[in-house]
Length: 158
Image 1: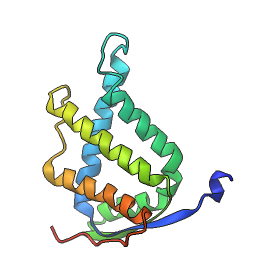
Image 2 (image 1 turned 135 degrees about the horizontal axis):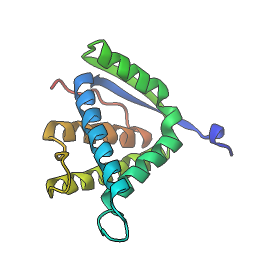
Image 3 (image 1 turned 60 degrees about the horizontal axis):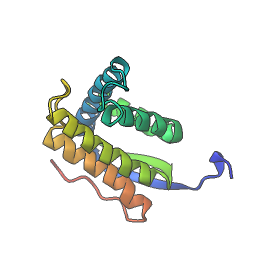
Image 4 (image 1 turned 45 degrees about the vertical axis):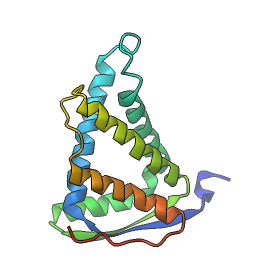
């Protein structure tokens, strides 16, 4: 079976709040930029933390982009357009392989670890704000739920 033969599952993020997505993406991008600097600047043999959160997160994000990037091109474009055009809410449709479930779980766990790293003061980037954390968890949870066969749940007014 080739990568093109993988069965795809529909995941729909219903009434996704675009501004919450933008803030979440902005925080995620800032965290990844700083982790990239940390990982590039520190000798892994001399700093016991460098092989933990920064390198694992960067490695996972790279792996996810390679494995699942092609499944998010159109939704990512829709979200960027929604941000640019001031759209308040949007339904976003993904078609992903079942393996995206474990990827979402792993990413959520590692981002939670990254928040602890931030709370310790090891970075300039602050831990994820509570509203953005709730958004991130809900976003990833929808992938897990829907891949398991649950119906899409609309985001509640916030």
